[in-house]
Image (spheres, rainbow, N blue to C red):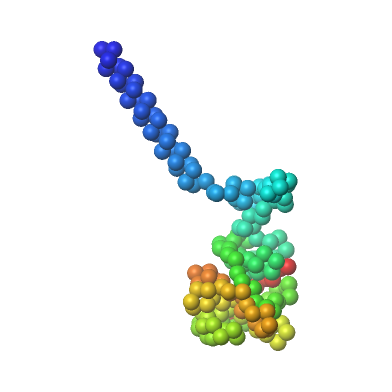
Length: 188
């Protein structure tokens, strides 16, 4: 009888060790690689530490829509962050993504989408799709687009271009979201 109960306890112990191992693996697989860069709750920021060990500025949560971007449904383009937010009527970002800015930037302010093109050749010679134009600066049309080949290279600084490039999936989402007359807000 003692033998069967010790075998039973050993079996339970082994099962518990396996269960703890599985849970530990699942927790480590779902944890961000850089906990300082990933706040736990939307709208908050976590402190981070510089390589020298000193404190750095808190990391912004990319889902947080810039406060200076107004209200209502809109596309928000932050020049310094190189980021776009698609914001619903409840002032919540439904999608956000980084972009490669053009050589000519629009001034901060509110605009509306004035024209769209399904597929054209960009001023840099690249075939682009889902062009959503909203401003003009320095006699250059400014708009969002995605290269058909999926690339987002840095633009040639010697050319005046207005194409703000994004990945194709992001271009698809912006194309669906921003029809003619849609509000676009540019913030510094």
